[in-house]
Length: 264
Image: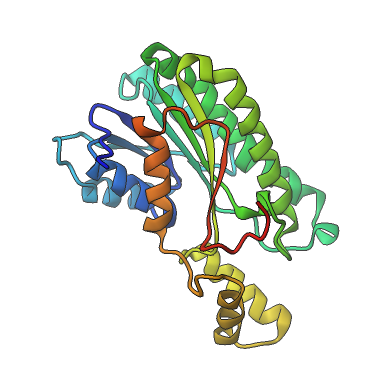
């Protein structure tokens, strides 16, 4: 199956590492013009030069820190005023999750921070990009969240809560935007070889008083595939949902987890 994104513009958040970087690279390989979005400008400058240009695309980037939603609003506004960013056909919302914690021990501020960093910033991006998608009669909004949407994960109290809120926000949007040719879907990665998983392994090692190797063994034992995913495997699912081949898929939660999630 040929998944061709030629002439499409894709804005990919969290795109200097992990799943975001893998997605941006795959999109570029498929012909899309990619707009990277992250907080570290030095990394963005490096990554934008690494992206493939099979269709002579001119990739670019925006700098924003999701812990401060105003920086995101300012970046979008400044780029629009400067004429360097008109909009995008594809939006990939992807942000690192909150630190591990138990829900009953988490501070009120940690819930507020996570809500702003994830849902509020996602909303800012949707409101900024939807007019362009509507005009083009083509839009793909893909949220990279977590399997905790279907099955809460131990010791990720704040993350479980916020990810579920995003899933319901996305489902609501899917009802509202489909009439304009815009689909909204969620990709739910399982354990994936990223810095986020490194933090989870380290936390499990400390809280259970076991070695990191043992923590890894225990985590892999919960996965029918008996291995962690590579970021590219998650990116493949995102690419499909972003393509015209997925035009009638809307409002779903797609686990990409090696079979780890136990429910339907």
